[in-house]
Image (cartoon, rainbow, N blue to C red; front, side):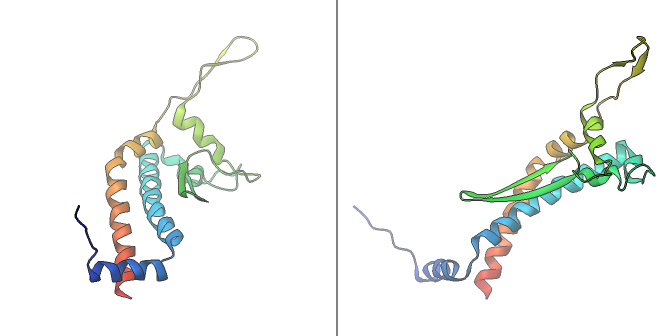
Length: 154
C-alpha cells in the first residue's frame, strides 16, 4: 500500500479556494461564456440569412433579433444555461416570429382552398450550435482557468 500526499503548494491553493472562492459565481461566469458564444454566432447567422430581423417594424416594440435569448438557472447540482430563439413574453413584442423562421412552417391554405404559402426553415440557430460546439468547451475551460488564476493571485 502506498500513500500519496498533496504538496504544500497545492494544499495552500485548495485551502484558498475553499475560503475565498464563490463557486456559484465561477460557475455562472463559465457557463455565461459558453452561452455568449452561441448567442453571438446565432445573431451572426441570423444577420446573414435574414437581415430584416435587425430592423424595427412599426407593428412591434422590438426587433426580431432580440428574440435570441439566454438565461442561467442555479440549481442544487450546479448552474444550467440556456440559449433559445423562442422570443420574449412581453406584450407588443414581435420576437415570437423568430421561431417560425428557424424551423419553418407547413403549407397553409385559406378556407376557400387557395394556397397561402409556407416559410422555409433557415436553421440559423441549429447551425450556430453545431458551428460553436468545440469552441464553447475550450472557451469555458479558458474562463474557468482565468477565474481560478484570479483567486490564486489574490
